[in-house]
Image 1 (cartoon, one colour):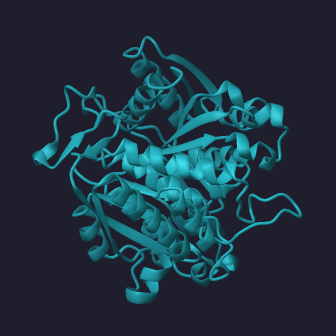
Image 2: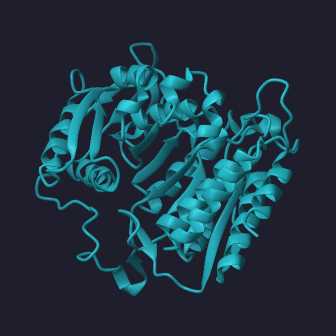
Length: 412
């Protein structure tokens, strides 16, 4: 997980912050919430904001590093194919982020990129990072740009669906009877926790190096992500499992208390709690017990990657990062930049294409376009067409470019 490198080895300092009188930035039912400045309006498809449905859309595309340019190109072609079929226009304009931005202007998240993103209807991101930049100072690493992007754009909620498709049951390392039918939505808080807590750093103490980070949450931050999870659960199986470590961490006790308080506004939702170590085990033992999981930044970082392997490949998992309704969401595959695969045409573009489907559904008010992309992916798999990461041993596979072409064929 790219962000895991942001946690220095050493002492973890834990603090819980409760701001009782500060109103939470939270999602509210569709009829109540109006769009700030008349720019964006809530769609009817989920608990996130979308621009009002229109005839043309402007998207910022962030190819990033490694396999990023290859997979995002196939996603663009798929988006343009579905737009043409359904009678609207979509255009993409590339911008720099991560290692590519560092190489070009020595900044992992340039101001020009932020400005372009904020003027867009939505953002499609491929992948960032690579060993080339691992030795850079912390502020000049690709992952720092990703964290800054989330903070600056107010992207506090990360939605990561883990759905085991019938065609890929055998791709999982777990038994078919364990993973068949799994459909989990991991809701991860994205702009708080140990990745953003202050103070942090590495210093000298008692004659040796001393590393420290702060795991911090405000009450308002917990409440708003809990509301996102509850709203999503109301459109699914009406079950939420909140994951924390309240038996040892004060900040997790605050998390649990606020989630319980928030759940009182959702009497139809069944709320349960698991400690993170137990949740990690239960995801492998009996994943079908979960509907919506909600958790903090670092726990969600780890658990969502674990959930991805239920599906059989990170190459199949999309995600959405949303929050501030006045600006765009960012939609990206869960996998990394896979530098060894860059330029080999072996990458799987399906997670990026499915991320584009989430973009259509949650940010552009085009659920019919999302349905079409998802159906095209399912049809390709039904036809036994797989990239290398999905194919069984000895089974024929195709490359990234051809997989994109196969998707486009099924959108015509």
